[in-house]
Each structure stands twice: as structure tokens, then as C-alpha cells.
Length: 285
Image (cartoon, rainbow, N blue to C red):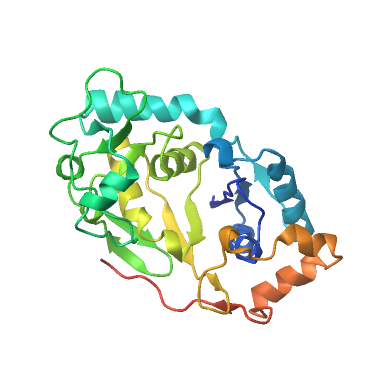
């Protein structure tokens, strides 16, 4: 049975881009007789606002969506740490501690990953922190991890089969200094724990899948299929985002707009003035 999910973080209100993503995941599950899940990704430290989770539920109900809710990320902190420390670090030996700050990484980085992030130059790889690592991040030794995993592929429903190229991202962070886990680790573990078979999310996360496929191989997890949908863009061609003040669904709801009508318009491609849908799909790196 197909299982999809919508996994918002309660660090800002939902906007039209979130509505589109939730509708895509919901409709794919319904069309194939499957389940649509809601998971609250609430491990982003002080930025997480618990009260927003209830607002998210009201927004989804206003859009006319039905879902099954699964445990929030905060219930899985122990599992993240165990998978990282016991499997990746002690069993496989592919993690190392890193004290570098973001500023230090930015100053030393010489390459950019396909997702636009800076490739870590490996400063702490040969000299990991010894002793107290409470203020350290934990990074994956990408070359070693790729050697263990061997060649990997993954399938996106829209872009087809992809050759996994996690090595292009360098030694990414697996356990963060300021949170229990990185997005890469948490999303990989969560989707497996929730039984997700079709990972539905925006095209902006397409490239992250190369790293997630590697983690699935290292952790011995089953491999889902992915569906990276186009993004809603603002008048300047940028994806809608909380930090840029994109109109919140709650504001539209409170103003008396009909959420079910809005959902039908999004399904039909009838977008509000100034909003467009991104074009094109990623292909193999």
C-alpha cells in the first residue's frame, strides 16, 4: 500500500507552497488507495513553536484534507542518536566529531554541492575532537561511507532512475550541534519508521535524496520511491518561504476564504496573481 506524508516544521506558519505540497501528497495517496500521514518535524531547537502544530492541523482540515498523524520527531531523539552513534560511528566507523563553526567552514570551503551548500573541506577528518564532544557536530566521512555502500540508485516518479552521487556533497553533518539530528538523518529514519513508501516533497529537496539513499544503505533500511513536485514561486521567481513573508494559510482562513475552493484551484493550476509554478525537473547529476 502506498504511504505518503507531509512533514512541516513548526518554526513558521504554513503558506500556499505548503498547501500545494500537502495536496500533492494527499492526492497521490488517495488516488492509489493508500494513506496520507502528517508528521510534525519539531526538533529545530528554540525555533520550534509547539502551538503551531495545532494551527497546521486546522489549516489542513480547512483545505479539506484527511490524514493519519504519526509521532513527532521529538519522540525519536533516542533513535537518532542510537543509529548515529551505534551504527554509523561504532559499527561502521564513518562518523567523526567536528568543532568547526559555520564561519570557519565558509572561510575554508572551496567547493559547492549540487544543492548550493558549501562542501566541508575536511578540517577535522584527520584530527577529530577527543574528549568532550558535547559542543561538536558529527560528520560522515563521505569517501569511506561511499566505499562501504558501493554504487547506489534511486527512483523519482517524475525524473526517473537516478545514480546516487552523495560524494558530491562532501562530509555532511549527521548530528548537529544545535539539534538532535540533521535533516538528512532525521528524515531518513522517520520515513522508514512511519512506513512511507513514496516520499513526496518539493524539487528543492531533490538533491538531498542522494545523501538519504546513502544513509538507507548504511543503516540497512528499505528504499522508497520519491516524487519531487514543482514549487510555487513568487513574483520574483523565488520559491514561497516563511522567511520572505509569504501569506499564511491561517490568515486566509481567518479572513473567511474557502479552503476547499483554494485547494481545487491549486489542483487545477489556477494560481493567485503573482504566483507561478516552477518548470523542469532535475536529472542525474
